[in-house]
Length: 465
Image (cartoon, rainbow, N blue to C red; front, side):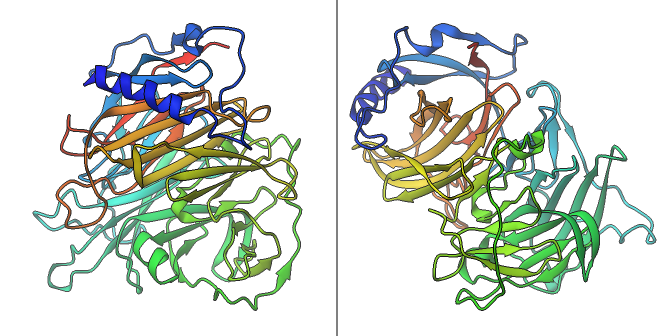
């Protein structure tokens, strides 16, 4: 199987040549040998499970095998997904399952926060899952720009005959150095995996004040009905809110989106929500939903938690701003992707095209993330192959500020399993998920035949220069 993947990598890398950018070759010019000649292992302690994945140097069209540590659903996942993130201290965070798990040493030691039973006067009474319903929870997690970690876990249909959703807010308070939690009885239907994002403060609103606000939306309602979600100014007590209508009518606002040279804190390289949140925090305060209104304008939630219409046309609803103030947006069309990048606050855009080649028949899942401190952009794509199984890939773009074309393409896993997102399917991989560690190592979810549930991998070999 590994020999077959190596052959596939060589073929695909040749198919990809010339498919990137504005008609020029995707390969970065080099006078040296393959990039992995400068690779070093960054973690010399052996992991329980390590696997070799095929990596293609897109400059030289040559391939090798690179080492990744691999983790299964017992490290924070569930039957169908992982929800991965990192923090500025280099921790790996995962709440693909019921409770957040975290590791500060690249996955050698792990800890889990499980909400303890509390007296009635501390938040709200603990509501356990029903016997036989364990393992059905799933949540989201992200580090806020003051160091707090905001998270939630949704427990579906565990209210006995009432079948009520259970919403647990989970907060790591950086100033206190401890986790707390709160059970929220929500009045609106939640239903399905949450997406979560910070609204940068300071917040002064009708529901209270805080350093930031946290928005949680349901995957199901967010995508199908433009319904609202839950919002909190303390990360514990949440209240329902509604999105504005797509036709507009909200107050217009002008904002300076150019933060290049602003020397933003490191949090801006880790606070990106999952792309399906369709929003990104703004360093000057508030939150932007790109391409929200029917006319293409963005929606802006300000620090009073009010809606405004921002007359800025982003290339996509999937965007991020990183630590150096660069705005990244990604568009998927068919089996092609375009990475758009702006270094002047969404005034002008550079672009890089990705065409996956003849073997890609359909995109299953995808995700992206940029790290301004490392000058690194990552694109993760899981696609349906014409040969049957799904293929997991990771593109590394090193030095994106000088050249947006990718350096390497890595095939994550065996690429031998056909899975589909959604309830009722026998083999499920519900969404892509990734994060970037402080040294540039990638953590990424994938699925192959070595495990019945999705896995995630941690990169162990990185360029030294």
